[in-house]
Length: 368
Image 1 (cartoon, rainbow, N blue to C red):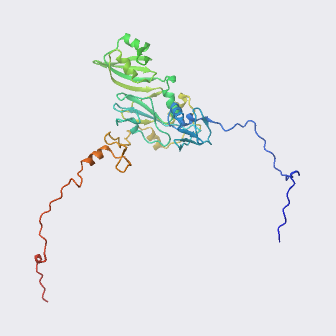
Image 2 (spheres, one colour):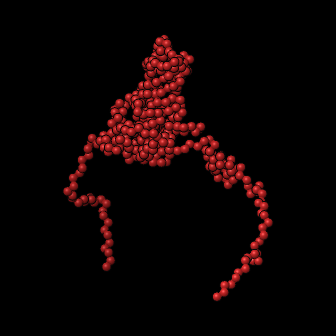
Image 3 (tube, rainbow, N blue to C red):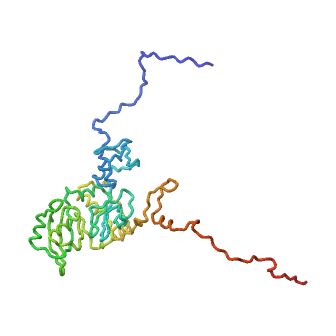
């Protein structure tokens, strides 16, 4: 049976819609679009660096938002896709409790993640972290020891280090010689250095033995070798320099040289409140007794990787086949010393007599 021909609708005829029991939804005028947050702030919360570092990273053009190059000051929502060097970054829009480490740095270590000379660095001893990366709060010279703070929060690190906050730094200084009252007054009033005037907030004598004397100084700046340079103005060299306090964080006596301590959750919350940062709304995680003992225990960090010397570092050179050769220089030097087949002389074999059948003993038959 043939299908009936479908009748075409008159375009001028009104459209009849079926009646339904659904009511129209009312639009709330107070509803606002999805809130946005600054991209550099969210990247700093992930522990990728300070806010200033993230602004420089965005300005370099390495960050994209939904496939487009991000601009400094751009805002993002939780539905946007952010990538750094074409790798997606998972952003957290809710504040999380950061981690904070205290390290008693000894002399002989540098505070740098990459040293071309291959010297020992404090970052080689840091434990692994799941989210973000460790940021050193302030720097210490190679010959300076004492309190060094690490965190995975860029905002917290910025609150400690930014010059506008003027966070106090307290040092114990041992010099060869002794200051006069006039010199101590000049150090608090201000002395002109190569990079501008500098001064101590306070300085007090702590005694000493023989020609060495100890002083306790407080300063609010973090310029390179500033404490040492202030004493060198009076021809008084610093023989030992140790930082004992940075802002509200003191170096505990039980944290000996070369050891670390992870701050408790309540102490980290107090740091966030001191810095004026957002405290996570989620309740603190309940720790077992074993976790509490481990969290408050001082530990000796272990070196996670062996640093190569300049001789053993891989060099990117083209080999005979035209491909990059990543072998170390030491391997190439030893390989060059190995004799080749052409240079080696053939081994001299002695004239050996071939064993013949006549040399075998005669076999005897056994009588039955």
